Image (cartoon, rainbow, N blue to C red):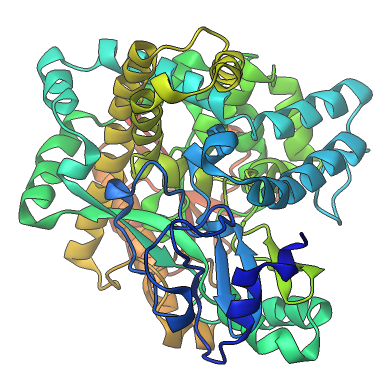
Length: 532
């Protein structure tokens, strides 16, 4: 039977009420896949109540199939990790096919031409580097390999941090002091996103498509009340620098992550590239983008150096030939690509950092919300009920025989990494809130989006405040004893002695009073004192 001939599809067409909601159906009815089972009658079109992600059932991967008027949209921004690890358990054949369209299309393009981005070419790399580049991109789809790497990072952190601190963190899950929530990215579609929809959707369906695309899901965490805030503030100072040290030790292939600087604000490529090609960089929360994650790039580089044999020479070629963004810094939230599958049925591509993984958002979202450890614990809980085929698939994916005990050990180590990411992240937010006004969720207010079309999703300060925010963070770094370099176009002191860019006018901060020259400075580079 064709999907559009099923009773559930036909009954949905009878509704004229314009809503954007997951398709809901009787638990004994036809399972579409990736949708929440509900005893609520389908015909009444009542919105499905959102279940907190931390309490979501193991049989509930989240609603990836939504309805608006008479149209249906597969919205891959709603997929979660456990569905990708065990699609046979959590997806029906139909939803596996739909998700496969997204993944298969990208993987095919990578194998064929090295990238799924239309305007990017890798021909400037030599033959060996092209092969390595393709392997790196493919490895970013390999979430089991990433879990194994996160387990390694967590075990290293366990040996580095004080024993009493590790015991305290082991006694808690992130949900004990953080509230994990789901929100929506697009407060208002921009002109380019609307144009993409208009090019691919027939006129009669465009309003519905825009309604759905204007509600792109993402997951985030917030401290859970006063007690959560107290725990973050008390614990964060105890773990400063630990993850930076561990990633520096784990990186291979000559990539010197231990020398990575911190970028505060936008650092021009002429200045950034000679640094990035050697060591990568951390992205300061004080730059105003909470969705990016401070350590996302270092995590990716350390992972790829171990799992895809990424070397310093290939990293240099990637940066030199302008491929950094394509490999590691794309924005899965910026584009909207819609494909019509059948009458009234569409697939929205490139909406999820997990199915479009060439970005820093995936690491930040899954680690700062505890999704990785939670996923492993849930799989351990149902391990006895998995088929031999599914167990074999897990063993192949993790490159070792899977057992509930091993999954729980991995979960505990990875949870320690999640604690470190979340504690540093939220402590930065607290400090910013003490000195600057920002929206609750860390997103750009709608009125600012309407006035400025250059904002990056996740930024939260007004334009005139962003430089003040960066300068404030740089001043603090200088007072801590870190090495600070200010990026400016108004000074003649070249930075060539440090990074070989004689043609860029810079100034190194030497005295606190130098900050009085602000706003001549528009961004900063910081080298932590322990690495200078």
